[in-house]
Length: 325
Ligand code: AMP
Ligand code: MG
Image (cartoon, rainbow, N blue to C red; front, side, top):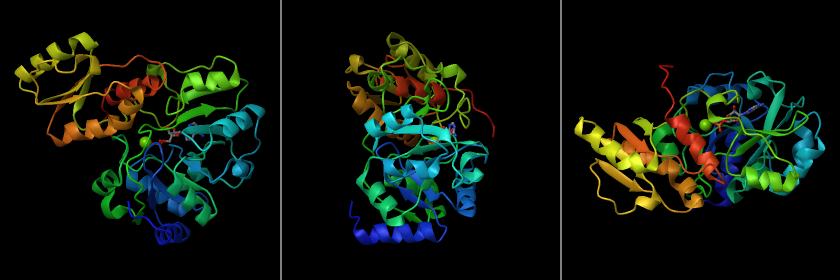
């Protein structure tokens, strides 16, 4: 981490010139472009291999700028922004005129957030506008949580990589739709449902994982190369043994409660006990098992509370049916 103010200036220069800048946030690394530059936005989709109908998140420097990007700010949105920004919460609101349809996948709504990372905030301030950024990985694969992940996966397709070290949270933002009568969670993430409910004072809906209706969410997403199989925690060891004996190169995400258990497997990652550390490490663990040549990853779901909800959602997605697209 040797970023200086000149790196921020160079990154801002690339954004102004229509370039792509990978930027660190507290969730995952983003692949950023000027949110008002349709040609630059088109390059994001091209580099990611992402269908252009999948909307992006517009990142801004400060909650005070929200009004510049959306049609109106309902009271609930104002409250959530005041409470959780900067932070891993994305609000879906009605699109303001400033936001090109290219950034929203043609939708009349726009997703906006203020990231909680000093370099992202420095870049947004230096640039002065909004930066639209999906995760800086190829479509469908595991999100990058270090600058090296971005360099390895996207290489020269990115004009500038701003290295901010490992992402602190490690899973994507929570996306909350505040366009309706009641807010609803479209994607669980770094801000927990319990945190949201405590601030709003009402229960808040989460779609069941099998019926996620966020555009841009396909059955398989956040997926490593290896196939992912989910089993009950007490079946992890037996499942790994059977698959390994059948000739698979099995990687295991071993629940913390089973630390030290003897295993038959190609590679084992023992998970940390805290959900914060689990989320922080999740994508790195999946990448590591890919790197070790595993073709099958056996894992189990954490309890769906707190950050466990986001982790379980990502593991479900990683285990989803693979499309050939
Ligand atoms: P990613 O960039 O890979 O984290 O993806 C950004 C996420 O934000 C995707 O899941 C999008 O579907 C979601 N998103 C962006 N804009 C909207 C919107 N207007 N309505 C609903 N979801 C959105
Ligand atoms: Mg993504």
